[in-house]
Image 1 (cartoon, protein in one colour):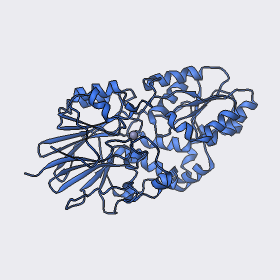
Image 2: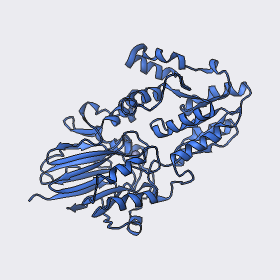
Image 3: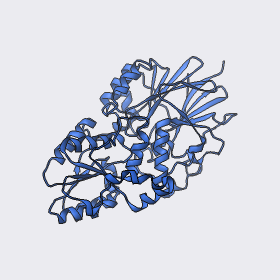
Length: 428
Ligand SMILES: [Zn+2]
């Protein structure tokens, strides 16, 4: 009988750049092929190494190893570059699978992102829907929607020859889709191997705001201060956070201002989640940055005109009742116009603090407007309590840490842990 095995090609000792191979006989599939972010000490990789990936500099991986056949397919768990970033480097005949909503995320991203961040393999992709099993050679795959800061993120259950491997991908239990965990507990039971992420175990992830709801509540408090229009830095692809901003502005009677990228992304995701904003007659307003307008005109002609009623620009600001979630590079004219009207803009930072130090624009704005950034953010990754609860409920025979700098901590915190090195094969 053919052997079944799991190999972590990268990710057993680092965050980002995950790549996992599941092999059965001569057939194999790959779960994620992400661009690495850091080495196994957590130190950032040099930009020139990342921008010229090769086998020699260790960014690209020898995925096929000694196998007779190349992998049957590559599956992407979610639309974060540290999980899909190297897919574009594969040959044109590669078969790629990703969720329908991840596809929508990447499709809109391609319109607006700079060349280096685009995903140029959409034409090679086959789409799966969470909960609907599909077959690749001998492998039966079922994807499950996860609670994560990338919309459409999925875990992947792989069944082959009576063996089961469950890969969590990135996830948490404190966001807007926290019920997805319960759903999985009823469907994934005692897999032979569970590959579980452990991002937050490095303790660089503050728990000051334990849930997405607590971030929304902090925003409500921040937006309630009179005559203080707010300028929020947040990831446009973190749809949970955009919903928190939408809710918090609604609760405080403010108008939420986004840009065309954000608006078209939300519109594209509505077919997967109809409850997402915008809604007719709501408090959402839109700026039309020239570069984004050109992109929209090229892709969709005059489609943007249907949003004229939502359009704001510097001349249209009638009060201080605004909250802006736009690029930090687009904020200054609006801040200046509101200052001139006698309002005092408020700066809010709503992303991982690690990015803040790297981006001089944040310090520049802070100095220019004489104030510190108010912090309100919760991680896209599960904290250890939820990781433990999740692992306990699933009850895997072997728990293998991945996407973590601290697989050692799993040994003390969890049961049935098997630490593996990158490239080490786990025979099932
Ligand atoms: Zn992620």
